[in-house]
Amino acid sequence: MNISPQFNHGAHEIFDVHEVLSCTIGALDKYTVLRSKVKDQELLDILDRQYQFMHQTYNTIVDCFQSGQDPAVPTKTYMMKENNTFKFGLTPTQPKKPIQSESEINDEIISGWMLGTAKSLATVKTGAAMETTNPVVRRVLADSIPNCIEMAYEISIYQNKNGYYQVPQLPITDMQAIMQSYAPASAAVAAR
View 1 (spheres, rainbow, N blue to C red):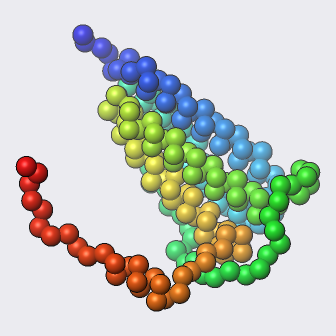
View 2: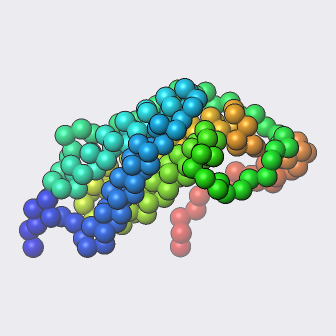
View 3: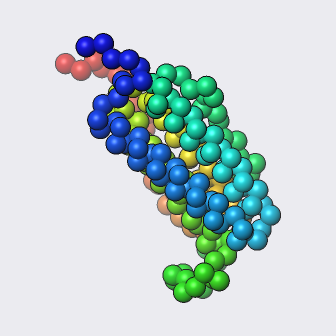
């Protein structure tokens, strides 16, 4: 049966892409609500850049999902401003607990929500991309996943720099023991 590109979608794909788009709307809505609560200018810059990028990605996915063809605006690459420097080690902090009122929302909480949002979008897009039948939609979804990873990484660096996301490290001898417990594979032999 000859199906036009517009309707070249399986039922499972329709529901998966519906979930991706709904989650993206939720992410955009969350960023909109949180924007006025951000105090740190650096976090506000990250939020604004990520919002703009997610907004364009949403429109790109909608375009190819509805047309079944290449979108008018192709998937872009998200470029973070942060360097890749992490502070290692643990510093004692107050125990974490749920907030009791909206007035307790601060940059640590907001950046945590942003990190969770980017990770969730990467997960839902990955699940959808693996079972999408329309090749254009599948490629757009697959190409957008590294951008979610980059946004999450940018937030984790911001959180680490501000003491919100601590990175413990194993002793050097333990790291070396684990890292040296692997060796390259021998020449590949065809499966028999």
